[in-house]
Length: 172
Image (cartoon, rainbow, N blue to C red; front, side):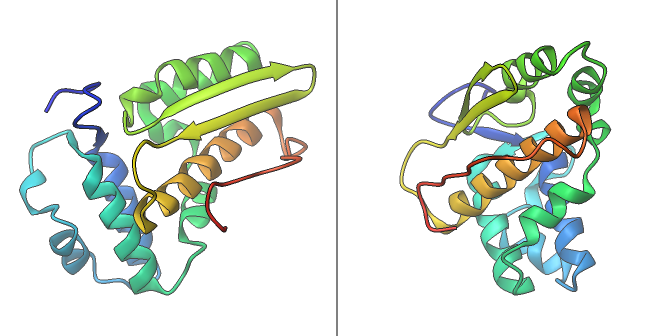
């Protein structure tokens, strides 16, 4: 498994652990969640198959009974939690530079999908695309990615950064 291989998309184990921690915060058994999401063999690794991410999100939302869990995680995760990428985005000289950096290097966190971002004066159009069949786990993961994107925009531009429109290829 090599980062960037479209046949075997990956995510950081740190991303997975954040989801486990958030689910545990609302009462989900973290050890059972790790086991059932096939995270048992990840000790000592830094990346995992994206399929584990999708399974983990599906289980975490199902067991917590909280469809808003990905949004709650995004609200609670500061940009600096994303390591060097988060720091670089936070310290970018402009919103445009922050967007370019975040989109260009998002693969450091996950290469399971792709970003398309265009900007106009006072507008950002962002699109996150995951290939393949849209499963419940991919749907939830997409909601999480977009919520984190919006939280990052707000961290940089302030609370006045609000989406005019959000569309999903699934019912949200």
